[in-house]
Image (cartoon, rainbow, N blue to C red; front, side, top):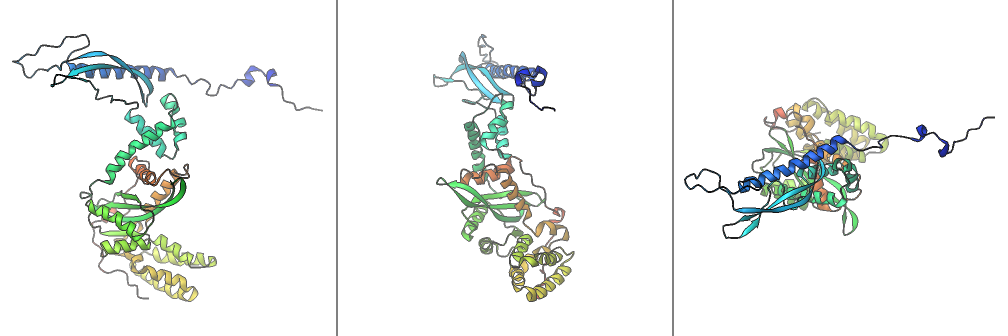
Length: 424
């Protein structure tokens, strides 16, 4: 009889117990590099001070030559020791010795010399802050960021450090929200809202971010606005649009919307004469909502034959057939299609090469999906402002890239004067 027993750990050989998996993290290259970085930073700051005093350490101040006005003029002042500073960068954390000096002023007083390379109270380089913010934007929460970057910075960074870096982003966010738009060659707008959960008054609640995406004359998509307005009411959308117009946004040539009542009303009051495209994907979902599940496949097939036809004439023929068929089979489906009116087929007035990008709001829906995918590690965002700022920062930091719209080469062509004939 055989016995399958486990040997005690004390009896196992050293070869069996020793597992040298990442057991030695010491890297002489990294250590030597950080020593060189320390020396370089100190030498750079010393050179900056020498240039300010126009003399090296222990050197005498040169005499002023009244006949040579083009020569360097020394600033009166004196050195007075050094101070230790801790600086963290992408090279890790280093302890450096910074020279100190007092400079004479025109009022007969002295002032502390300040380095332009190393700001007062600076503890991290801008590149380090960018790395921390980038890791956070990639979808990692504050606690995971500090663990993920511990090897890079030669030690864990605190949760508060991540939060402070993120607060610095708010300065750029405020500037972006106030930027002038008069020089922006925007010819199209895509508008939609997305729902996120945030913490308000210590309770998790749902808010709506209103997002406006622009298309420039060269076809490049750019984020125009992202605002927390509580909901998708007409007043909320009008406030967002009025802010864009106030900052110089020109009247667009084409609009793409999801069909929300509040947005439709706001656009009708502001730009009622601008051609507007109702998203065909959203209307498809509406049709399925009005049909029993057993008819979903058939409704989808007929709808796709209509929307994705090769020409405006074919679209019109399929639309007539769709209305006739579903008036008899399921009147709610036919009524839902007719409710959209000619705005569902505005894209047929554009060159065929632009139909793919013009008949849906997929461009902005993709941003919503990427945004939610990256915040899934944070079930509830800290505040409503943080949610809007995070949406913008993902694009500003290049975490989400937007390409040109399909058919951008023909964006300068005029619209067809006559829309599709909707007479059934």
